[in-house]
Amino acid sequence: MSWLDEFDERLAQLDAQSLRRRRRAVLPEAGARLQVDGESLLAFCSNDYLGLAGAAPLRAAVHAAVDTYGVGSGASPMVSGHSVANAALELELAAAVQLPRALYFYAGYATNASIVPALVGAGDALFSDALNHACLIDGARLSRASVQRFAHADLQQLDALLAASTARRKLVLSDAVFSMDGDVADLRGLVALCERHDALLLLDDAHGFGVLGPQGRGALAAVGLSGAAASRRVLYMATLGKAIGVAGAFVAGHYSLVEWLLQKTRSYTYATAAPALLAEAVRASLRCVLGAEGERRRQHLQALIARLQAGLQPGADAGIAAAGWALLPSSTAIQPLIIGDNTAALAVMAALRERGLWVPAIRPPTVPAGTARLRIALSAAHSLADVDVLIEALRQVARTT
Ligand SMILES: *Cc1c(COP(=O)(O)O)cnc(C)c1O
Image (cartoon, rainbow, N blue to C red; front, side):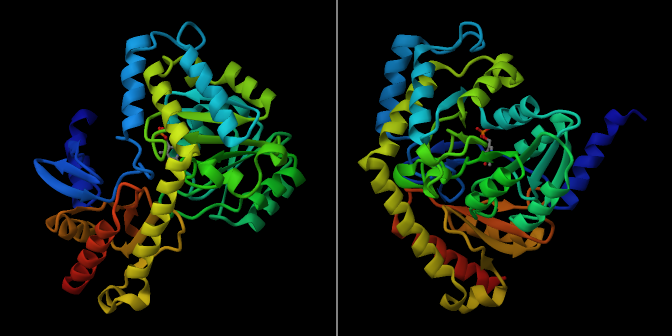
């Protein structure tokens, strides 16, 4: 029997373990609602944290850009794909995060998967938080550097690993906001360790840029590590498909480091540049994010987070407490409700869906075994009433499980 015939069996195994993933084709409606298979659902699964993905200034920017630039970029940025829109965006991104220089990429996953191998190789050492995003893990594998995982947020262990390493080039990898837990890394602690051990730090702020810090300038600015206080050892990476509401990513930091990445990153050189229409959409989004509109949206998001936490805290509802469900301690828009068992998490997701709500159940291998959860993602597109609907539905479902 050819191994080609094993795939159906392996898919059946995924079904048996409740691990088969399925997509839904969606059509956006007003607010945070999505039409799914003809049914209108109130969605809590989007990373569009500021509700900008459908905002009028972004739409207008795209319409205008199509008239000027057409649709595709036509080539790698190293050939003719680097439009004046993309060039302008890089200057604006660097200014937004208050770092010397930025490089604009077409996708976040490809960015991390390929900048890590551009920085380190065989004989070098990587130190990676256990809960890091898959693209940092894949970048580490591609690099062929030795990889040491430290327990999530355990800076004592990281300190010991860095001290014990004899590698000349050491690179620490960490999410700034952890995508499935919503907690924020101790950035001051990480930078201090890198200073002490002559290491560099690559920080993935996919979930912080636009939301955290003054004017949404991101996780570094939030702790005063941008501008004049920026460390030359930190490479800051963030994506543009989440709070920014578009697509793509960028890396920013010390001028020579970014210039090196421009020279050596394979997914930058060998991929077609992001189209100018996306760069123009990001530029329009940045103007919102950094201005009064962004401030208003961030404040509303904070109110939604507070409302959800108050409604689901252990003392607030006996049913939720009895079911053993608990929110993880997170101050960001990512509010995970731990259910535990895979099948139970799927059952809760299904029960919410019957009530017109879409909250994704996240299971292993994306999260550790036994910590299946609902990953509740809030967005400025939600109303306080939307959050109340979710709280009430969860209380009802908790009573029936
Ligand atoms: C979403 C995400 C990425 C990938 O970015 P894309 O632009 O969607 O490819 C990278 N890192 C983290 C932490 C993410 O959450």
